[in-house]
Length: 171
Image (cartoon, rainbow, N blue to C red):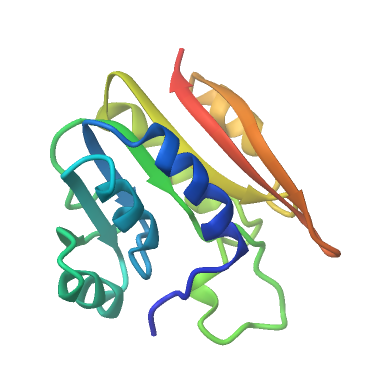
């Protein structure tokens, strides 16, 4: 099953339009909505996803897509990395297709893995666009630990959480 665009996708999408240039990597592409948006600004877009069905779906849309667990099958450096990760904490009430949403036991484990490697894939002035939830613990601390600077671009409140879009750069 392919992740259908939702509030998080639409929230970060406006900033993909603003920041996409040069070489772009869309990690966890899902439906490909953010990769397609980046393709409006540059033709050098690579989309990756751990889900085979998402990879095949995006290929059918004409998006250059590779199956990859985060950076596992990614080569090169990028001007922009887009990441709409699974960011919710695991709980006892498993969701159907919870791999789309669950970012680990605490909710931030996938983000920890991402930020521990992201610098290796950024060009000198490369940037990261990321979206996450108020339910995801310690995101700013993770970015600081991995020596990134960041700025909140937007937040949107829902009845159960807030979603944030951050612009992240190497220190």
